[in-house]
Image 1: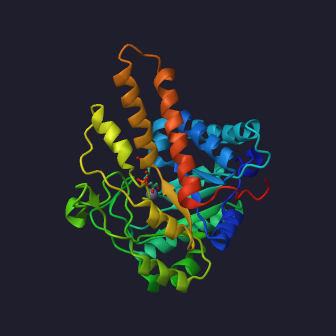
Image 2: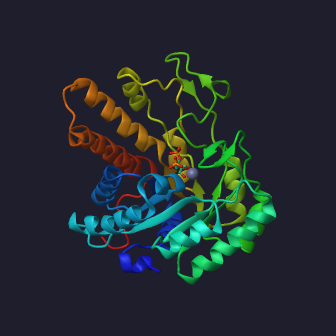
Length: 335
Ligand code: G3H
Ligand code: 13P
Ligand code: ZN
């Protein structure tokens, strides 16, 4: 049993309280590789932002759970080495799909876990969420639960359609589970294809797809039911067109990739939305830089040569999100 506090990590409780009161959101970036971890830490340190580093079940399978945990421990040391005396780094399990997986992460030093029972019947979701919360709180680990279903693929939880969170259920759900934050469905979804072309309109000038707006009315109803309660948005990559264009220019094929416009995320950050999940934008930034580098340097084969611009491009994207979209720059408790 490893307690996250001994690793220099923090849970989400205090940072969420400040984010809700301050009208900004904490970035939750997924990581699978060392370069992503380095870019996240560099961005958080340079902007003086708290940050959530999250690990999916797929990341655990790809990189090995123990290695990721040591990387998060290393992230704290790295942040200090970069000059941040009091980093606020959360190691979070993304989309935990069982009590056992959540427990395993808590026991190995995670400071926050998500139990995602959103695809289960309501009472079953409450039952397992409650079980996770009871165990997590014994170790002062915070828990995110989910109500409502996002369209797209959530790890192995698949849904063809989006079911917005029902505002009339949130008080009962939050009270009975005891969760610390609630992930809701208001029209975001995972991946780089968040909307089908037929759900969008087309800008007549550029021919680009314009997605439908998020359901802010649902968000506001939820906020009214649970004043000040931390709300989480998954599936919040904006799928930057310039990265998609670079990928397509250098041999990729991502037709009609589309994300959530950043002005809508900025708007959501000002509300009780205090955690915004971004994974796909990091994948796009990395892939765009690697494709371009390799196309322009066909004789290079040292991974350090193409992973360096990939890391730089991800860092640029993380800083942009922190400063221009979520507003968490300069928000460390101790500067
Ligand atoms: O919500 C899903 C995250 O983007 C993680 O994706 O399961 O492919 O690691 P992954
Ligand atoms: P994106 O696919 O929009 O980056 O969403 C990531 C996410 O929600 C991770 O849980
Ligand atoms: Zn998610």
